[in-house]
Length: 630
Image (tube, rainbow, N blue to C red):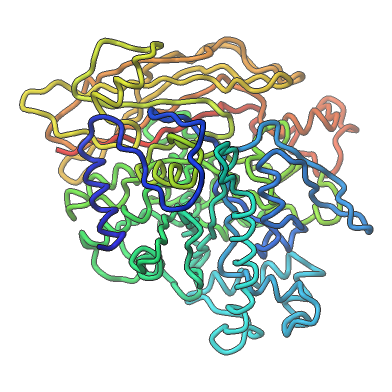
């Protein structure tokens, strides 16, 4: 019996609804966690982190490796570029609160090339591209990326025939990645920290971003990692995961998480295969099975919805105005993203595709992460932002006037509802999509859907057990409505991020439920305010005190007033904080910039006083959806 079959059975059980799913299966040897909660608890982490093993991070001065990244995630301080001639870092960073879990996801395609270029005496060390990467990192980065953006992608000449030299060179960093995850994984009953073995498959045909982070459930992983040069379409990548992991009968388990659909040129969620073959039910089921989550936000922009989407003013949050990755170069004109680039759109299109194919390929749960290139997972606080290395090559030479490109941001976090902080428990939460993403804050959010709601239990101990007993949590599928049944009821409860004593969390402003539905192959979307409200009040930009008002928690039960049992629908909750300072305002304040005194504006700090640059944001969380299918 293959693991693929077992996953299909688990998916059927999940769709049936009812009480909380049975406890997860143990696939590894470890102590049972003392801190165990049958009704699950939220764990905060980051599953998209690059270190010096990634060509782009190394070329921009990052020296932290996976071992350093996990130390940082657990709360230790580490140094970052620039480095003095002695090798000492000139800056140090530290999380205010450790993460519960993290994963290093270095680029699979360039592990070998990076290792060869930085190793004196290697066959490639004196190759022009390697010399350029060491001396002129922007040029080296451009040379490497031109190969991987080509169709088809190729190896550098120094890799030898069929890339054998670079494939062999990648094995060392891949082993180190596994060893770092094992060394920092807490297998004791304390369960203080969980590390996952992972890697990024970085497909980018013609500059269209199709990247996926691959998360392995345990220490059993393929000897050869999937990469875009050898598996040149997402379909081939997923076939390899089935062949080399899920069907290999070795105990290997894996899932893939797409990210940055906002710069995919519309290819990430296109209703077409990149290999030109016809869409089938089997294709849709494989994609849904292997890609149960999507990363909705990270430092290269937010991917929830396009600006102006359905009259939703909150769709302007950290949205880049580029269609593809290669259009992000500063000298190029801005281009509006294309259809097929946003998560909300994909969730709606998935309903229509299910009617056509018999399965929904876009049944995504939602998380956030950082795409950090400093080896510093979870460094998301706006006032602590030091950039992500990507886009800040000058950080090799000195501390930049502003931490990063003004249109980038600190990124977000992944939150998983699981019984305990172990690989098996967290991975099971990812697979059943009981997960949500935040833009950085650590608010707690529960979201349940049901056709048989009880009396309003908001704010009581009965909220969670009733949610599981009478319906499904975020990521679940509602059981088919009975003849003449009422509309589904959705219950959502959000607690603000408590923050720390030195930096308290920002109050919550409102909760919204976003609904999409399909009628005859056409889709529609509507946003409902269900708790709290938008209030007047502005941020004090000088002190960065958030806008007044808001609440410490918001809770409500909401019944869809426009429900039609004949039409499939998908619902997710969006929790919005009161306005607060964006990272650039914190940085400009710290630099002493006074827009009324031009002498205080140093070169590179012009954005501090640019009226087109936002100075405040509304941080938020997005839950995984709940689906209704007639």
